[in-house]
Length: 102
Image (spheres, rainbow, N blue to C red):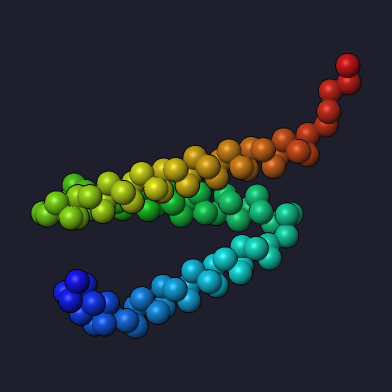
């Protein structure tokens, strides 16, 4: 427990910045108009595609189990985000299609 507290104390600036980024991200995403959602989702999918490639490279050069685990988790989470983004984008684009008359 003491070791964990020492790590947190040593990296308190970075932890503070990550917490601020999380709040800023939530605030920004909550205020995005619906018309901009699809282009932003496409951009996020492209970025996470790069994250997947980077995580695979990290896993290939992993010298420790920790690096391998973090690389695997990055691949899994980025893949889920890309797939979810495509699903949401598809659903939003289907809202703009004309309905078929019966």
